[in-house]
Image (cartoon, rainbow, N blue to C red; front, top):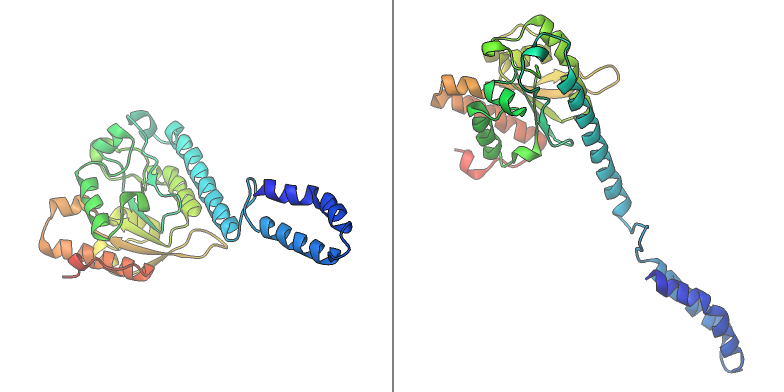
Length: 265
């Protein structure tokens, strides 16, 4: 289309010279027609330019790419981190993974043996169950972001220590700031207590939204505590499964997402 525009512009003078020889031709009319045609061609997108509606989409894509870059840069910092003893005991750090623009962010306690081996969050049996929970919501793992309070596995999967949380928590806080999810789903007591600065049990916290404060000048983020999928594996019962699903239905409703028909029963 750009070639067409240039053709009309470069040949305008020749066109006027030609029609000027004919007294019956209205030169003003020819010029107006030519300008109309030029504007017509200019209305099409050409290489290096964007058409109507494209600038916003391009801007959004650039914002997501920028988020992804920031997350990867931080992931490199996590892999090099030695702020606590876990840095020298791990096989692999587990920074977290998922959609940089996720509306939902799942946060667990710490990596386990499978996660430590692969460097990815929630890939063991508990992770497989989390995948099923996500799928039951009508979503894919690639739609959400998954991380942990600790980025390295505590020996024998023991509970995180206070000094380890203090050293590692800033990484998760930064991830939350970058992604800025609409809802955080805290999996288990350790994640919920840490993010909410609470001493309540998961049984007291789950089933209702709380507010996570990302920092001064930033809007709070809704946080839904629920049972960790590892807990469900150890204490599997229809009742516990129902409780987790009730929590997730509230998350979907808050986001305005449909609840899959098969799971409404």
